[in-house]
Amino acid sequence: MPPVELPIKVASPQKTTPIMKYAILGDIHANLEALRAVLEDAATQDVGRYLCVGDIVGYNADPNECVKIVRDLDCVTVRGNHDHYVSENDALGDLNPVAANVVRWTRAELGPDHLSYLSGLRLVQAVDGFTLVHSTLDMPEKWGYVFEVVEADASFNYQTTAVCFHGHTHVPVLYEKASGVRRSGYKCLKATMGKKYFINVGSVGQPRDGDPRAAYVVYDGEGRDVELRRVRYDVTTAQEKILAAGLPKALAARLAVGK
Ligand code: ZN
Image (cartoon, rainbow, N blue to C red; front, side, top):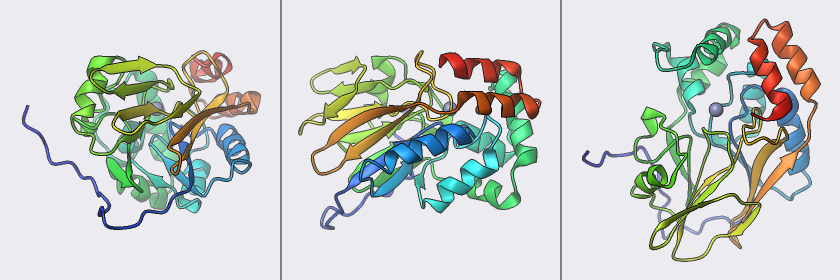
C-alpha cells in the first residue's frame, strides 16, 4: 500500500517547544467517576497540560459531562473510533453489538455542541515534539488494534517523532523500536535518544488489563520520563449509572474486574 498523507501538524524544528509535564488520558469512555479521580491524581503531579488519545465517549453513562471536562481542560485530543461513530452517523457494521448499542444511546444523549466538537477532532496530532493517535499511525482512520509487534512495526514506519502515545486496546503496553521492535509492560520508562516508542497509555474509563483501577500517563518532556499511574475510583457509582441508563449490564460488570 502506498504511503498516505497524514493530517499531522508537525511543529517547526526551529521553534522552541515548551517543556513541561503532561497528563495523557485515553479511552475515558464517559466514565465520570474515573475521570474525576484521575484529574485529582494528576493535580498532585505538577502537570501543566492535559492531552487525550481519544474515545472520550462510549460504554459508560456520562458522555456530556466527560466531553465538557475535556473541553474545559483545553485538552489536545485526537479522535477515537467511538467519538467518530457517535458524531458521524456512519453505519455501525464493524462495531460489536454492545458497542453499537451504546453508540446509538450516546448519539441521542449528547448535545449538538459536543457532537460537533467530537466531529471536528483530528486523527493525529503532534504536540511539543511527540505524537498522539488513537489507533495506529499507518492507517489511523481504519481503527486497527495494536496487540503485537507486527502491528506496532507498521505504525512505526509513519512515526516521525521519538515518542507517540496511543490507546484503543485499553491495555497499557509499550513498543520500543531500535534494530527490532520489542513489546513490554511498563510502569516507569526513560525514553532513550535514538530509539522510537509507541506507548499505550491504558484506559481511564474501562481498563482491560485485569486491573480495574483507572490508568493514565504522566510524561515529563524534559527528561523524557513516562510514568503509568493507576487510580482507584468509585466503580460502584459508575456501575449504578450504567444500569440506571438502561445500558448493557455487561458494561457495568466488567468495570469491577478490569476486563
Ligand atoms: Zn476505547
